[in-house]
Amino acid sequence: MTYPSCPQCNENYTYEDRGMFVCPMCAHEWSENEAVAEDVIRDAHGSILNDGDSIIIIKDLKVKGASAPLKQGTKVKNIKLVEGDHNIDCRIEGFGAMSLKSEFVKKA
Image (cartoon, rainbow, N blue to C red; front, side, top):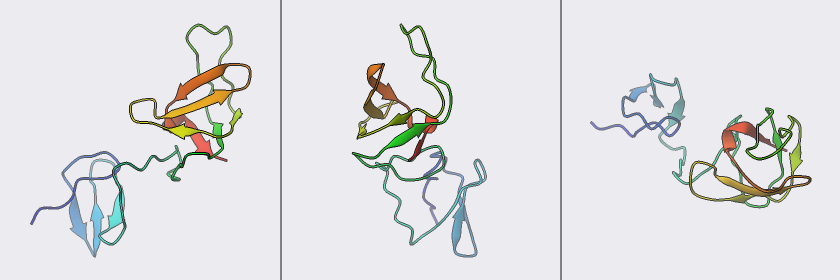
């Protein structure tokens, strides 16, 4: 039987244990009934992000060409989700238009 790839790390070493799929690479567990869309973007804590959400930056981020980093705790409103490595487009007060990675933010 072929098991689905892990939605967290995309490895194909998953196995079934008591009705749940388990990934031995990242220890992620999910059920067969759980709808896992490949285009879902999640924050650092696993919450699903949507267009128009507000987020909070969870780590100081260095910005190329800027004299100061983006500080932890900075709130960003009205995000737009896009494809690619930096999957959040937003406008940050004092910095302007910016692209962020979802792994460095949490849903507000």
